[in-house]
Image (cartoon, rainbow, N blue to C red):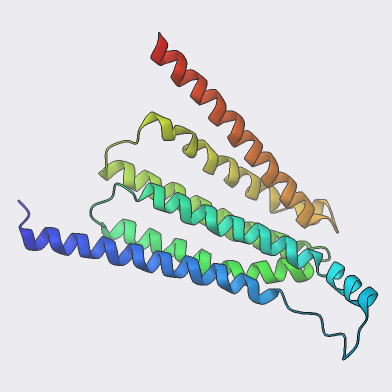
Length: 216
């Protein structure tokens, strides 16, 4: 039987893990903005020159938005999975550390995607690959949490499919830079849009099934 000291130690441990996660996610989100640099056009560039320079930065805008969405989604899903966790077993800590490793790498691969995504397939493959590792780690975290905690309510069932859809999108995006040379980032965004659509449809169907079961 656990003593009060043991329970307090467990609570402190999980609280520190949450604090570390929140800090890493916040810093990674902030670092994404460092890639949005003001164009250097001299002292008096003129309106047309500035518009053209800003338009040339479109790949960086896209990589920033996609990466911010990805990191925010990982934070939301990790928070959801860990909501009922009272203790932090070593396996869960190790998995969370690996997840944070992928999150800290995301600003770098996002910079590579924004700079070379339309020119080199490896830029898209590297970006999608890091996201595959992040999404896959979250799925393993979910499995570990389900072994130690009671199952979640049925209303949250759609969140389980949502992560699988995103994982499939990133897996398919790995070769997109080679299959669609010059349009790899656009293919990545299209795949994520399809993932979001599939998640929306699944959520709607599950809600209908839940309502039908409640009224039966």
